[in-house]
Length: 413
Image 1 (cartoon, one colour):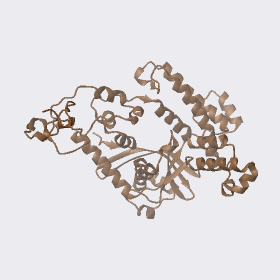
Image 2 (cartoon, rainbow, N blue to C red; image 1 turned 30 degrees about the vertical axis):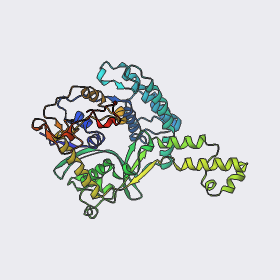
Image 3 (cartoon, rainbow, N blue to C red; image 1 turned 60 degrees about the vertical axis):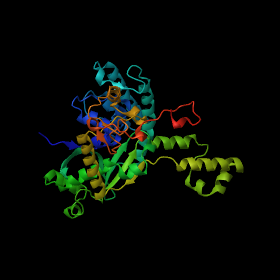
Image 4 (cartoon, rainbow, N blue to C red; image 1 turned 90 degrees about the vertical axis):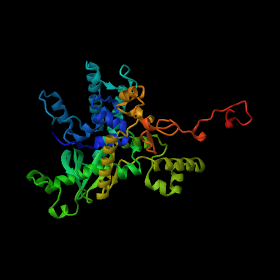
C-alpha cells in the first residue's frame, strides 16, 4: 500500500476549508466534486500557455497545418495576437459543445447560473478571446525563455511526510532558476501575504530541490542544464534559496491595456514626472490637471503581471507544521460546517449544503455549562454530554425578559 502523499491542491483545500478537505480526500463515501466553470477556464488557459511557443508559427505554417489531416501536437495554430485569441475562443467553444453532448450528468460543467442555463459559458468565451490577445503580446514582449521546462513531476519524502506533484514551469533567466506559477482569475487576488507565504511555491521549490538531490543520470543532466552543481546543493536541505519564485497573473495584461485605452490620455512615464509638460500637451490647466491626478491614482493601483517572491527553509517547516495540524484536526474530528462568500466558489458545496441541513446527533457532542452545543473550532474548556451535571447556581440559568417591568432585563419575578 502506497504511503499517503500531499500535493499543493490538497494543502490549498485544507487551508480554504477543513470541511471541503474532508469531503474531497477523507470522506469514505468519496462524493464527486462539481466541475466548476472557473476551474475549467483555468485549465484551458494553463494548457494554452504550456504549449504557447510550440504552436506559434508563421501564417504559411498555420495555413498548411490547417489543411493537413495528420494528427500532431506540433501543428502550428497561430501567428499573431488575433489568431491566438481566435484559437483560444475555438478551444473554449469545443468545451461548450462537448459539455452539451455529454450524457453523464455528473461530468457536466456547473456554470455559475446552474446546469441548465449556460449563459456564463458564452460570457467566458468572449472573456477568453479578450484576455488572450494582450497575453500573446506580453509573451512576445518577454520573449521565449533561454531554457524552460513545464509540468515537471516530483515525488519525495521529508519529515515523515510524502510530497508529490507537478511544477507549472521552470525557466532559466540570466543564469537564475525561476519557478513560475500561472494564476487565472482576478489579478488583484494576490496580496502581500499570499505572495510571500502561499504554500504552493514553497511546495514547488522543495520539489525541485529534491530532484537535484536524487542520484539519477537523467536528473543530473537536468540539473546540469540549469547550471546546478554539487556545491550549490550543499547550500540547502529542503529549500534552495537561490531559486526565484514568481506568480504570473494571466489576466493582468488585459486589464492594463484596457486602462490605457479607456483613458483620455496615453500615460507615459515622463508625463507623470513633469506636470507642466502634460498641461502644455493637453490644453486646459484645471480640467486636465484633475484628470492627470485621477489617472495617476488609478494607474498606480493597476495589477502587476509578474509578482516575485522568495522561499526559505523556514517556509518549508511552516508548511510541515501546517500539514501536521491538518492531520491532527482530521484525527480528532475537529471539523465543522462553515458558511460565507467563499462557499459560492467551492466545488463541494452541493454535498456540504445537504449534510449541513441534516439533524444533529447529540450523542458525544461537546456542550458548555449552559447546555449550548460548542462548535469544534472554538476549542474552549468543555465536558462530555453524558458527564454534564445540572448546575444549581442561579447565575447559570437563562433569564427571560419581562417587558412588564421597569427594568425588563431583571427578568420575571
